[in-house]
Length: 174
Image 1 (cartoon, rainbow, N blue to C red):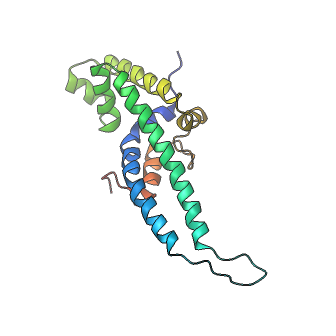
Image 2: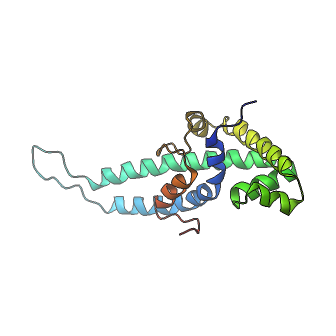
Image 3: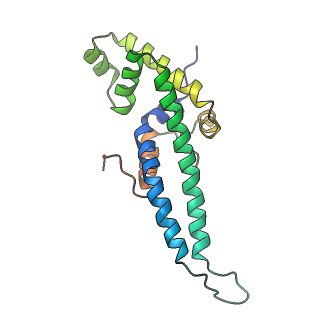
């Protein structure tokens, strides 16, 4: 049986960063809207298009909102998947992906064999994958093998860095 795409594991690793980006979105949006209200349109020359800082801010706001919709859908999919897991599988998934523990560490901590932990992780990843496919914003990136719709990356750490760089979001690993 084929396992879930790597992008599912990347998505799980990035869950804390995605949660932080949702919280930061409202502050960033408000700041952009405030800046837009006070930005004038400046005409440089009659034959050239106006220099429009407001348009650039609107484009940035649109990108920010696309990332917000993705983060919201991804977090919702993961939250629903976690709710659908049995208690032990949920605990193992959280230890592995949210706390960064290795399989052997989890096995020792919970007094299970390595194979049991791996089996439960596969089960949890499968539940996340199936749930995420119900969210169009997330499903396409999972099927493409990407974990971020705007920065097509395969590496969870790169995505976390890119998300942190979007508006100064921090996950505490600076």
